[in-house]
Each structure stands twice: as C-alpha cells, then as structure tokens.
Amino acid sequence: MALDGLAAGLIGISASIAIGATAIAAAVAEKSIGTAAIGALVEKEESFGKGLILTVIPETLVIFGLVVAILLINLIGAH
Image: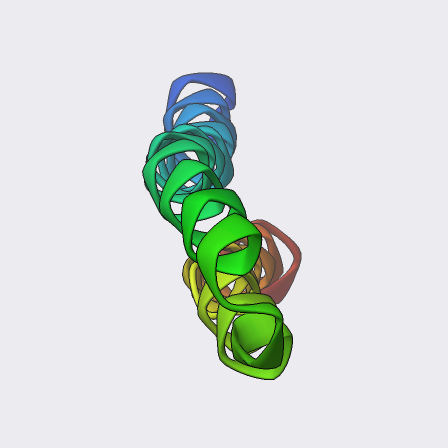
C-alpha cells in the first residue's frame, strides 16, 4: 500500500516537529543550566565536572527526537 502525497507530507512534517521541538526544549534547558553552572564555577572551581555533565544532559532530548524522526521517515519508505 503506497502512501499518497498528503500522508507522506504529514509524516515529514511530524518528523520535523519532533526534531525541532526537542531542539528548542534542549536549548531552553541548556540556557538555564549553563547560567547556573557558570555561577557555581565562579564560586567553587571544583564544580566544573558536575556543571559539564549537567549541561550535556539536555542533549539527550535531541537524540530522542532524532530517533523518533528517523522512525517516522522510515514509515514513508516502508509503504
């Protein structure tokens, strides 16, 4: 069963929303975490490792969004 143009387009838009929304959410989270990490680093230099780990954690959201987008795009090719 082949997907018509509308269905394939909607799946493509869904994939772009999945990656775009997660990227925006990660950016907002990293802004807050990065600001707090720099503040903590100024007061206590030993907190660099913790600050680095905490700024990397929101990037996992983007990885999940990428996986969902890839799965959605594979739906177009599967039909």
